[in-house]
Length: 356
Image 1 (tube, helix red, strand yellow):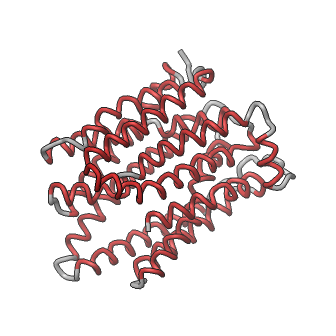
Image 2 (image 1 turned 90 degrees about the vertical axis):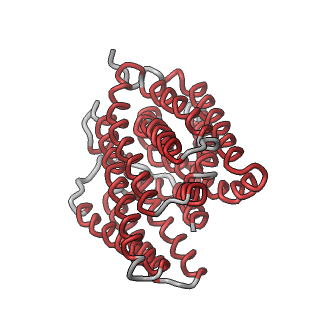
Image 3 (image 1 turned 30 degrees about the horizontal axis):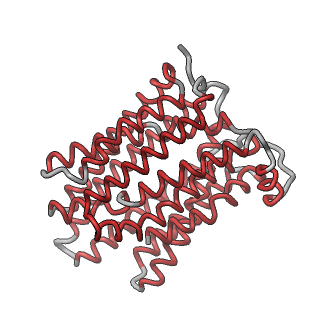
């Protein structure tokens, strides 16, 4: 399911970014989000593995629209100088919602397992989450029209134009390499973090949900602090510093011997690694030509999703070879290489977002 959804996002994110750039994002975001919510419900309803995987794939198509066009839309409706704050608030809100969802999902599954079978309790929890997702779509009907950039070329001409553009092509190439390294590293363990806690320490779904909720809650606060740190270090340097701070905790997750230590290490790692996300996205939309905002974020998300799709099969092989220590050491190496490469490629833009 994870691989199917990630593959769909990798395939459709670049076209989704182009469509948003050319035809506007408001209605596209609404219908993409609506389709994703519908596919989530079907994943809970279907019992045949093939249909579940198909629904996961179609969910990835719809969700890619929301992921790719959200940040460019915010940059279009914000006033000059507000982009970083608005994008930071956007990601902080996502983290808070994820915190509530992770805790609620784990608790509801455990609660229903006393009444229903374990399989049906998971299905009921998934369907409830999908219904909440669809309710959120009602708020999308109030979106304002963003500033529209006139784009007359088709996608093929735009892509070939990027390859011949001496200014923008190095940016796209650097984002591709960075996102592939980070996405593959994340794909090695993040989709299976529930299994890490359950199999290694034998904890309940409620406990796992509480740990994930705590991570999301701390990250939402860290994102606010991260946007403030960008005033002193700039968007690029602040993002790189936060990523590097997370690396020792990432590697130690594979070796930590006790559950209490594992939870603390996971919380710190998750907070540092994700606190820089709004800084990274804000830097991207400020660096690139306005007509290519959707494409640059599409490339980032598509390549990251491709890394997730690759990470699953690779993770199984690495686990057989060396267990969790080898998995998390590999993740640390990939994250280090990706972050170092990003800084070398974009250090000339370190002034972005810096106020003092």
